[in-house]
Length: 251
Ligand SMILES: [Zn+2]
Image (cartoon, rainbow, N blue to C red; front, side, top):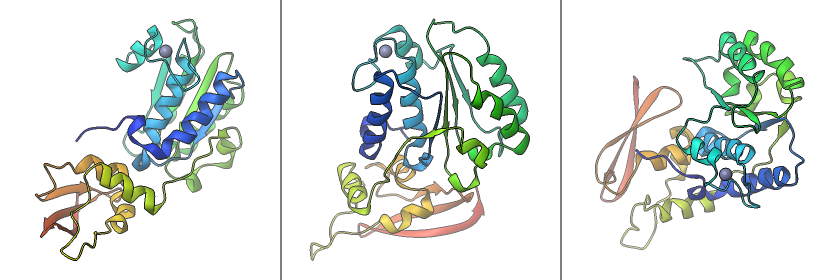
């Protein structure tokens, strides 16, 4: 399994550029909500936004990739980027308290301090409440970037304090095009009819998960694709058509 880069997921480009434009003009808000499912690359977009904020030589199209901040980010060792992910099924209050404490300290690279919280719908109540004050008054040069897979599960007190980054999910045509470019579509049958595999994407967890699991080398074989429901699909190709079997066992 390989992970994707931002440039490989074209449906993220507009939202990313919108974030860069605002930041480049120096009008950046201090709290952003990215309503883009991880299965569509939400985390990849959120990370690119964090890079935009931290880059010391931002270009009109995004982080430069060459300054000290960008190099630290690509080595996953930027001291002013604080990433919080769920611990098990929840983001717990101690994680948020520790984050808020870290954000009160001076930036080590002299720029902004960025909190990147993924899967924010998993904040438990205590953790969400602990985050509210920092969301409201984050302090100078602090930017919070929140990514969510389930907007409906977010507390209104969280969403109302953030600026939502506009995003348009890829339509079926874009998805088919992308799958074809990634060589992830089975060949057309003898009548020239191509196979539509988009129907299974919502169950598998959308396109990025699908793309991660499949490569040209795994296509002829059986592959297990974990779903967000905790079970697995077993997918095998037969006469170059997909056969999808849902497993009832958990991962
Ligand atoms: Zn840079």
